[in-house]
Image 1 (cartoon, rainbow, N blue to C red):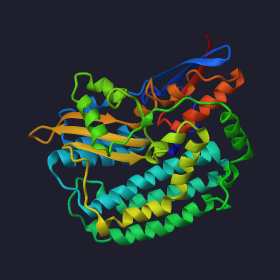
Image 2: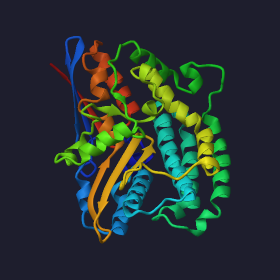
Image 3: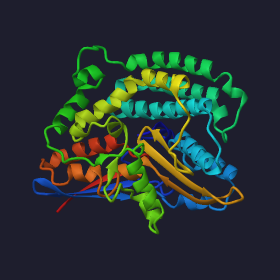
Length: 382
């Protein structure tokens, strides 16, 4: 779920017809008597869009990012900036890194809160405007960092601006915190009775294991992905990425590495809520970077990886001697999470449950995996 898609469409952003421009996710579940026999996932997102960047100057490519990637556009732009800077040998200063990390964080939080109040805690929907206002304030204060890295006048006022934004965020998040800090039930998370009943019903069924968590900060995983990006089938790989041939999952569950309980629906929802409620503390850790950190990237020329609400976003670029794009590749979180052999398939396929429970269980998992495009679910009898 995402606020940008809903605002653009003027209606619910999920379970709707596929947009021919942005594509979508089609999930078809085949049910046979008492269990799910097969799960087919068809991703129609236009994965060849990066062909548009070839032979264009980097400034023009960067200018195209916001219009081409309306959803999570901040993440796409910052990933592009870092990839281009890495390819051109431009260093990202620590202050610019802090500003960009804050903007990435702010956009991710906006998307996560939107998912939370839309799918799980609709009584808090009025709080969404406060989160959006805070994100817009971040953009206003820090947009000086959204150009190719160099010393700018914005750097001098960055630290006071970050401190102010951190204080504002504490007030924005406060209404979403649990009323009873000691409790651990779903109700203490502000979920409606209806949602609690839905999650309890979904928890009755022993889902299959999910794909392993994606962690592109591990050099072995990153090198495996980059090796595949050099192959002849690289364009198709960006559409259906794997790590050494195996699907992986990215997002808040993978970031928290809750592998042992990854197949539990309640655990997945808690991981989302945990990231929302710990947001002020996580922003403070970004602000403290100036005390101990060094600005650093992936260590691979022309490659950047950033964390978005839905997971890891990778950009890889090669430039020619004119600073024009020779090759550009993007792997977005939705391609990992809705891989044809990924978590949705492995958790659902072979599951025994009544026919009338297939839709609520499948829809709950799709919402938790959170595609960045519209999706449709179709049930058929074998």
